[in-house]
Image (cartoon, one colour):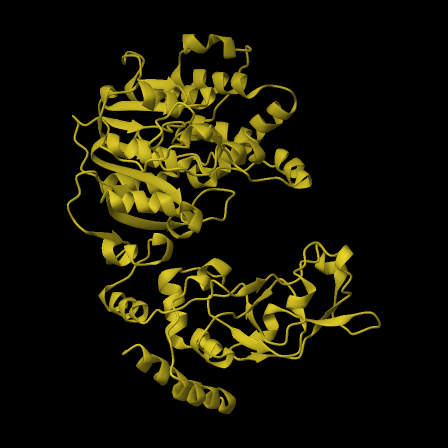
Length: 531
């Protein structure tokens, strides 16, 4: 089965790695930041102080291995002999209620690992409520074998539907994660259980050597971790993020279904286009479910993707919406979006009139000062000039600027070419916003980076007609359907479809813009697209 795009240059790509935390000051701060795994703590009054006491022990010089080994002895009532070298003779007391926590050993490991190390490896352990919801939707039998290629402490596969030790296979590149998963294995199945099939191994090496298939694959892959992919075949999706390789190589191993816990960015950010294309090309996707920001110490929302290599449908369910593969394949970057039948028709009508785009236009980033507190002022003064901010922009209008800066290009962190700022035909827009807010600046005023801009090029429609389109109810809805983001990005704007408009209709729209009759403009724009 040829599952991957052919890439003759693949051997030139030896690893993919996290590019987070380049700022040195931030890295130093993150080295000292420890996040309580609140998503897995049930008995907070007892467990939180106990975890903090372990952290103090660690800060006072005791290594994590020794602490985990001491905790494991208390949880199991015996020692894991193969990890005897972890033992430093520590004696750790665990209160009875704390012992009842699910995946206590995993919570200890998470908490004692500083945030910079967790970000570097992309390690965010799954919360219990999400696991229960995922497993409840799967028809797991006691004869089914479950594989987790990023097993961590094993909390994703040690669930209530798993009743036999032979049902479990797990891999992790982190030796301490495998230690934790083995502790949980013996907690669940007892000391007399057969040796677990839980392996300390690089995922790529395991996949290369493994010929076994499994009934289910359940995986919370590391987000942005360093991964050596030099051993994999040439035929593969190329990516900067390791999680793609977990999906592409692990999903085909599942005879029934695979479920991947992923950051929402996987379904709606450009850099993951190849992964979405691969999923759609192979007809794998059956279900997407949103969970919000569920990982302790993080703000990014999480989704699960359920894949089935034997899927025969040409649709998938996104939360409660039924979506056609063909609809997603017709959209820029194949963003996975919850598009119902009515909105599918709207998209079809708009793209049917697509004759041009903003791709040839000149885009500019508003001034990045590097320190707004010291370099952006609320009152005019000698040597300062006004600057347009995002708050100044509403549809069609720019309020009188309320902020001022000294435009010394050498002392500003990032600036666009001066000729772009001074252009009197630039269209400015509010950068961070769910709604589209575009206005024409004819004054050559500077903009701050909350207000980016572009100068239209090679279009058959006037600037006034263009901002009428972009501010319209139709394009606001289209933007949310296609992208669903709370920011307006250059990439998304460049891929919005634009129609031709007759000269007569352009004159009419321009007149209505001047008269502020925006509802009538909306009616005309709907008519252009036969809506």
